[in-house]
Length: 253
Image (cartoon, rainbow, N blue to C red):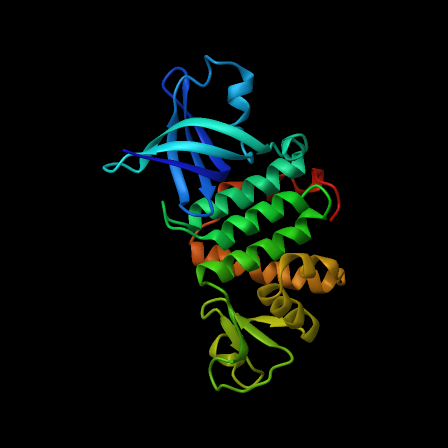
């Protein structure tokens, strides 16, 4: 049984037996890890705090060779992210980001850039309009898992450069004006929205969030990214449904 020490972000927890937890966390070097924390409820709030949702901590876990459910022995908190758990929008959006990472990654498949993306998103959530941050986060997560839409030319005829076009959800790529009939359901994408989407897909998160855009452009990009993600997933995640159900109660983006 190998012993590992790693920093991680807590994605999900669930009760296990009378006093234990099953915790799913995401690490830079091991990717997604699942493990059991024994006796956490018996040892008081201080120990439980290390396994709260969204917590950033250093964890020690014992890797079981014949199971993907390991034994977690200790946690040393680096950042509690309590501000995310104190607000409805923080819980809703951070929960959505965590479920996306959980859904789109495999156990113990390292993705250090996804860890950095999630960590940075938690840092920005309390200070950036979360609906806007969501669009950047989803676009860059799609990039890291290889699902990023093709945005450089018309996928049907190869015409380039395209300053505007029609995005085919089915093909995950742009169509030019002449080829749009190949997918009548393709979404119209203005020159401004296409430029923003290209920026979100290439630039670092800090640079993406530094520049503001019109509500119309942000709305176009958000609709495209969300629709494409749901199509590739083949479903709408529970946290996405929750976000939609409480949208009117959330602060304005």
